[in-house]
Image (cartoon, rainbow, N blue to C red; front, side, top):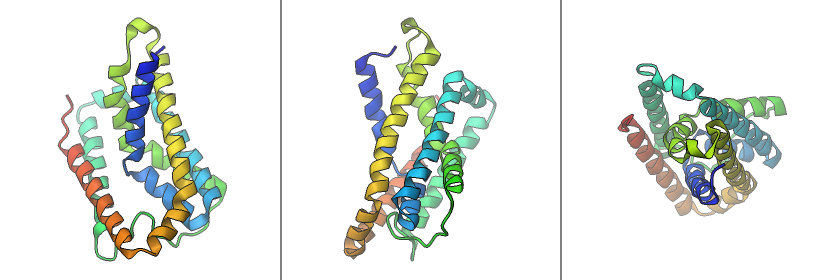
Length: 210
């Protein structure tokens, strides 16, 4: 089993992942604003189930096998970078909608909310890259079953992400009201988010496999 220090360090890195804007965050905020906290929590359950699926695949070596296929890693990396760049443009383009702006979206049932949340997380390259790049250095074969170590660390990441995203869902409406009455902060939020997404896209596009 990983040591307490290892678990705390990995939890801190997991919090950094949760704070980074991505598809999960955008979907949860959009659903919470359009349909309320309950819908946001159902979407959150779907997202974290998708993350659990990726974690189990990584722990079993399936994700590692995918990355061993020629060009598979580059396709995932460049595809993720392109998606992040598109999100950055959507944030800063003239007339673009900021993250916490209310969005007219059709109401959807729990099954649909859960399934879209699952797909959003399961197809999120940020999560897969996190497990492939960050998880391996924390594994120590001398401490026992590597699969179990991976699962424990993955559970820590999912717990941290769930806690942060739950706060995000609960606070989405209040944050939207705050920003809605302060145009300067609304505009600043758009550009900060766009810059963060753009930098992430650039970093992902230029990241080497080694």
